[in-house]
Image (cartoon, rainbow, N blue to C red; front, side):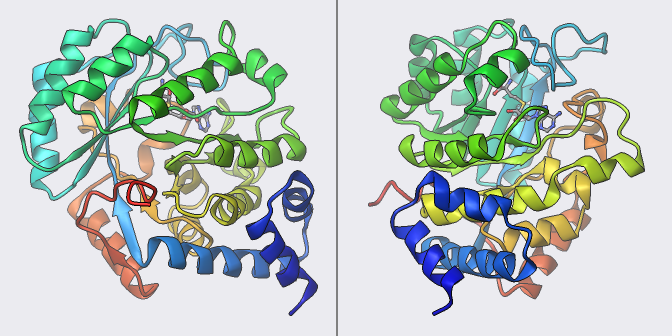
Length: 347
Ligand code: SAH
């Protein structure tokens, strides 16, 4: 067994900061090849060959928060939209009829929707048939989270973005890492399948803090973890794409797979901005097992610009789904037609 392989086995059995950092810092193509192929083996053992699809519906770009990296933050002078509860249910019906068995409802933190609105939306969608609902609507009170769960929401996605508390407070004015983590713990205790994640390549982010992020995913016992590259908010011209931390993102996906094992890891939409086809294939062969096609109707989708260039990635269409099936086939994988629930639920 090579030294790298021994280190990977040891990382798998007893992960710690130092071992994770070794791989985050390595630029040796041989070391990275071993890292990626080990992550792919672990992915296969824990998730099999199924690739799960999660349809995303972005239903409001109003936001009360001012996260500096985000294109829909409160201070941005952009055209705002919100989709009514009835229309959300209507669109969800089409999504369900296309065969999706997971729907991710995402928005800015928009206080417009009351708990009753969410209950109505969730019940309306659940009455369509067997479809899992993931909410990605930010920080709420415990009672609100409980009401969504009791109405039938299955999962909740709330990325902690970075485990560096100083960086977190700098990037998210008026918010705190402590509260973010508290929300994740509450969601987990309520019974949600809980998702987290970080951005990679944030200005001021260290590799040591990324190693801490990966250990935190494990401590929080997350069911799904979506980590993508930070995409600079303005001025993303072709040449600037090189500033996006593509390789580091693959390392994080691979290390997250090895450390957290039985989790769902998407090839994130942000990663596809780098390179629509190869990035997805790379992520799927380095630990990822999920893709999130965007099912937001075009007239709204173009207004939901969390980061530049988002409009051209992961947009669902018959062609796109066919492309995914072909990609899966060429990799010896298959697009699942199931919900793809937590891998921890049964064990
Ligand atoms: N308001 C919800 C949904 C956030 S948007 C919430 O707070 O949970 C979903 C994700 O997009 C964020 O969690 C963040 O990780 C990512 N994101 C935002 N701006 C980004 C950027 N400039 N580059 C890459 N990812 C970004």
